[in-house]
Length: 433
Image: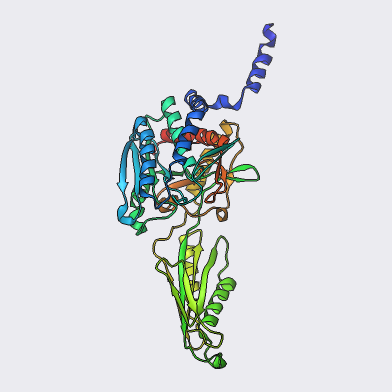
């Protein structure tokens, strides 16, 4: 080739070079490792899914914890089992990897348990093309598979050595132990140590596009209890309205007066009459009454989900005020259950973390991830550390049908998410604290 064509040829080569050329040599090694270990990752996930670990199945959760220990220890993690039987649940894994102390301290969050207890008919893994179907296939055993695949890729590339990482895998995310302050203490302590928290629950997708999650709403429960003067129905409203009318007034006032952006308040259980008694678990209500008796008591239970602590406080104050305006002959009270999930508010720090992930996406030739509306995501463990550290949600795989028989994981998304996570963590490990 004539020398006069060399500049043109060189330019053509540069233009034809894939965006992956922007990745460092260790990052390219991570990609290759994730790809080469895809079958290993799927076999590992299948084994986990086939071990029942419903939240109340203590031996099952402990069995899955042993499987995760066997993956984490060879990577250089010191793995501790935090027994939580005093809260009615199995316990949690806390695994620590000591790096060079100079980069961002990272907290990785997942959970060992599923909603499917041993009596569920949905128990086994099944491969259906690009989908893996099974209990916890996506939530959250699929997330833990992404986490392990990413850490193994970092190990192969030599970037794990410098990384300061704590992994917390709770054993009761789907049905938290009581008191929740004790159940979440290991996670909260890790959050106070961390600079960044990454939640490996499922990747959200909208219209076929991967989305980033920088916020989760809270989850609280409330109970309204109403008592009223009872008597013959011929005297109703003259002047006494009875408990059922008062409860109806309160619920309707909630509907009319509480709404604001990102706030929901569900009424999940209602009953009233001559008697209305909740069971010990407060999920069943036995009511008695007759058409010609003014209701003496009424009960409603529901939940409250908000985006910020300020929104929660404001809404609870409004609910208290509504409940306090009792109809003649009635008296109402509202109580809020202890042990709810706090919110993870959208913050500048969370948004900056998503921007870092989008730089990884650009280098991987993947589309940028927009912000998921927090209305489209439930409460989760990362919220317990949200006030102490920046966070990002949804580093696990995509899937469908979570919490129901037929739950599935999108298999190609496992490797895609593992690559994203490995590169993001490796870059964070190089950022000065």
